[in-house]
Length: 244
Image 1 (tube, rainbow, N blue to C red):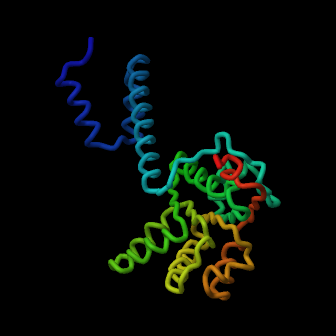
Image 2 (tube, rainbow, N blue to C red):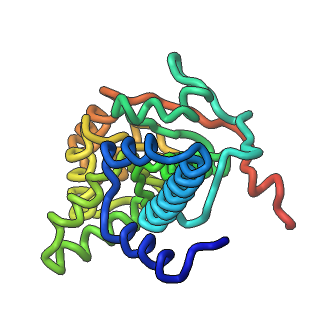
């Protein structure tokens, strides 16, 4: 026989007003009959799964991915791995624990942005905070925050992410002001976050992106210290599947 409406309401009200403690859980787990404990375990597991799903959805919204991406069916043929890093290492996200950076460098349309986006999705699925920006959108966001007097707060929010993706570095040159803002993000992230950068430019050409060889060298110095270079070579996926 189902519980009365009044008893059901007591359960809901009590559950919403308290955080469960280990001692109370252990006591009630010992008190109940096997059937009662099984019911309690089922409820708690459902609550856990609901909270996990809500947390993942919240993280994905905050991440800012332009489109959801996964590694299902991903074409790895264009990827050249550096020593000490392979597909399984990447998918385990172990580089996040070590605060290592990745530079995904190579030809246009070979899967760099897809990989970076799928890493963000994977991190959020594992309840880790990730943020995704194109280099140009990051500059615009930081400029707006500065103009509104909340740059420190914005930088602090970006700094909370375990994984920070900066996509399309080098597609558009940065002006002096934008370069300084992006440099500050790299400086703050150093040894505190994992940064994943996608670019079609080798390091020797980053000076043209930042408009300052010394600033570019300072960024590269931080990235390579705890970073790995993953290279992409091949024909553009979009060209291979173009309708024209």
